[in-house]
Image (tube, rainbow, N blue to C red; front, side, top):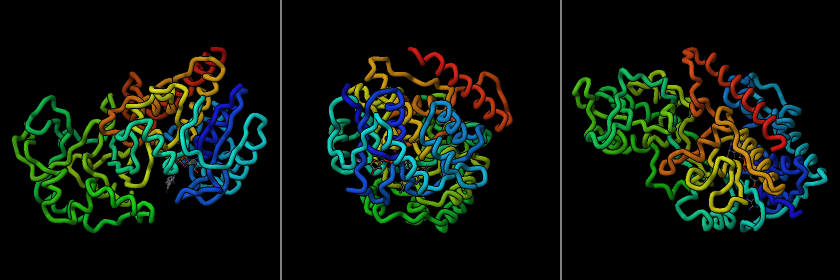
Length: 438
Ligand code: FAD
């Protein structure tokens, strides 16, 4: 049997290789370190954690915690080793990164069906392949991937605006309308009077920013067209009002007043549970973003599923290119996982590695690839990245906003999340039982 090739020994590739081998299929895992390092990696271990040592909240009624639980059900090696090397971190699953990486490297290297090869892969190989080279994919391979996907479907920089849970927006203030009433009312608009606008601008101008890494500063130069909101604020009193906050063509039919400035929110998911702040790419610190964006009328109680980021990130336009099985539409023997497909964070990378590995092994065994139930955190994430609007696609972390409705209204948030958790784990159990012999 031809071995499956997994490219990239990060969070996603390590999990994918493990799942393939556990299914009884031989696999070659390629990792370019230590022959070549990305600007953020420093060790030769598999699944190196490039920054924080935390996999997010542990409680299973939180988005990250539910993802941990689902991965445990699916026999994830990444979460098993995270559990084994956990260090105290309040309510989070954090690990001793040295032990975690060393143990994974040793465990995978000694698996009889895994051949571990150190070296950079510069072009997408033939055969069944899982691409998992992450946000800092080496330039030659990124170029080959760009040839494969088409120029416009591979991004090198993530300039993502914050995303807000729909239920947390005050609809007594925010109103639905499109500029000049063109077409169907498609945006939620948060109106500001002059005093509110000036205060908001003042706070933006003095807010604390995150430090960009050197390699990110280099990349950022190429993104003049996509200026952070705080930079626009600093350029002049009215710059934002002539840019993303322009009020023209937008009036609230309830009051017929013309606002001084308007923050527009665009629907992010099909169900309208998530709203993206248009033009709010930002380098502000996360605490500052929450504090300042909650000054916007209508967003006083906004719950953010993702805050704005601007950093180097290689990712494909998954909604255009991929199935929720994590196969490319244009080449079903090619799968991809990790940050490269537009999910965000360590746990989400392991999760997509898990499904890509399961499906790559199924292809090798002549079986149909599987889709996870959209009621699970994993299934909801893969459904989102394969069906979001390709035009505005930006990476998405695990969150409950992408879940299908429960069918009953539960006002208390923690209680609602508990129901999501129960439904997810039950559906995953049934899915596992159904898919074992299919
Ligand atoms: P990676 O873990 O990066 O793995 C990709 C692997 O592929 C690497 O080992 C790389 O060496 C290898 N590779 C690349 N190109 C090739 C090639 N051509 N041939 C062979 N091997 C190759 N997420 C968090 O949850 N928390 C954080 O604190 C956090 N901080 C981050 C900080 C930075 C600077 C960056 C860039 C990202 C950060 N992320 C963080 C996001 C993080 O990258 C992902 O969560 C996670 O590492 C993605 O997993 P992955 O498997 O997709 O990529």
